[in-house]
Image (cartoon, rainbow, N blue to C red; front, side, top):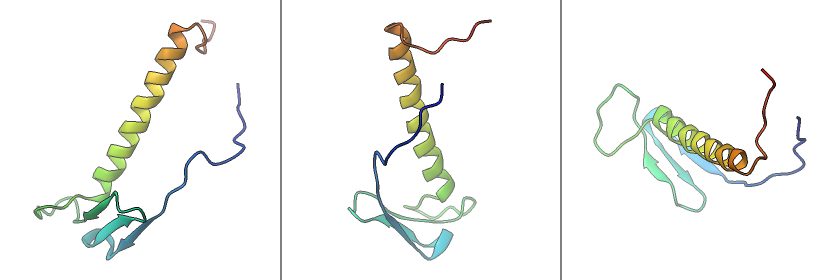
Length: 81
């Protein structure tokens, strides 16, 4: 089943300064971090790969939870085997 996307559910903006050795901050200030390349061990920094992994993991976990709820209610998608 295909569900067309008809509009945005959420919108945000972030600004990066200095690339992988700089910083990134969202407009609302809830995310404000210093960055360093993955192999450099700089105190109090993260790297873009860690930020991507954290966001992906959170979204994936939410998708699994939503599907589990739908399956429990009998609304889950099933394929004939």
